[in-house]
Amino acid sequence: PSAAAPARSSSRKRSASAKAAAPEEATVTKRPRKGTTSGKKKPAGKKKQQKATKAPREKKAKAEERPAPEDEVCAEEPDEEELALGEEDESSASGEQEGQAAAKRRVAQPSKKARNVAAGDKEPEFLGEPVPADEARAKWPQRYQRGAPKRPEDEEDMKARVHYRSAMVDGVVYALGDDVYVMAGENEADYIGRITEFFEGVDKTSYFTCRWYFRPEDTVISRAKFVNDHTHDPKRVFLSEEKNDNPLDCIISKVKIIHVDPNMDPAAKAKLVARTDLYYDMSYTVAYSTFANIPSDTTENSGISTDADSENGAPVKTASLLDLYSGCGGMSTGLCLGSALAGLKLETKWAVDLNSFACKSLKYNHPKTEVWLVNFILRF
Image 1 (tube, rainbow, N blue to C red):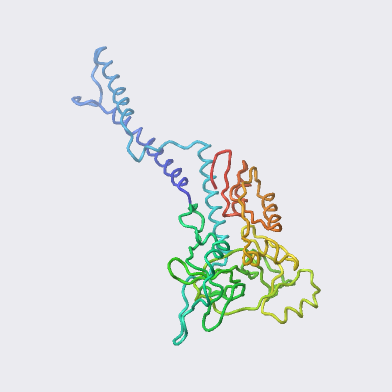
Image 2 (image 1 turned 45 degrees about the vertical axis):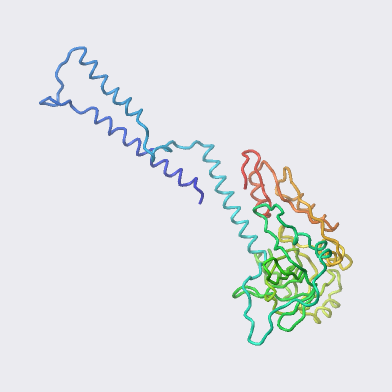
């Protein structure tokens, strides 16, 4: 709950107590004056009557001039506009929390807890010579930038000392482009990823970078209601653009994953899938909770799959988008998905609209986007 709700309830209580205190002060000023034997006032002259009537007024004026106690400073009742703003703040805060929670559930974050190495096993190590410095800086420039300004909400990339092309974990050699199982948290299924980098960090720890595959239950499908006549193939996964850095000893084993054309004949598809561990025919975009087909002729060249491009020294182009009068974000979402087919990774960083409900909907579906409501200049 927001801080606005307690302020409203407390103000009502304080105003009520202030009203209750007023009659009490009035009764005190009406008590009979000292020196009278009975409760009746003695007849007084004209001047005395003026003084007697003037005294309560002076007391009342002094009482009004007295500074209010600290707990009565905010005793005024908020007007309708303040109440409306408070309610919008509450709903926007709760919507943002829900959006962030939803994003956290969708992204498969690997466990950073190192695996125990059995007695006699060799520690994970990189193999071969490091990638030449010029080549490494061209392929992974963000790893070698020093002192680059970062936005506070952005996740900072791990800085690297050197890169490698292969590594050995538990006696098994792994290379760039291999699909692997990655150790997950307790009571969780192992994560699935494609190795895109091997590097030694500035902290002299060995890392690898994974591009994640998502099982159906890791996507928005998990929130949908399943029907009796529809089941998901347990071998099917979805390739995403999400990446994370992990300690090298989190690799468990290799897994054979193939790409299947979405328009392939079902009989031929069944034979092909039978000879592999897993397969994928669609991509999954976490930021927009959307799926897209991956045709065979665009798997290596489109923005949907960029591993081959990065290995050939062609870094993926990225750009940020400001969506003015965004509504719920449908136009910018379509533009981002279309630009991916042209090899451009476009992300909606900011959105502005004058409808509070549209802003809440956009923020819920795109938690990483900064959404602004222009009529009150409120940030969601």
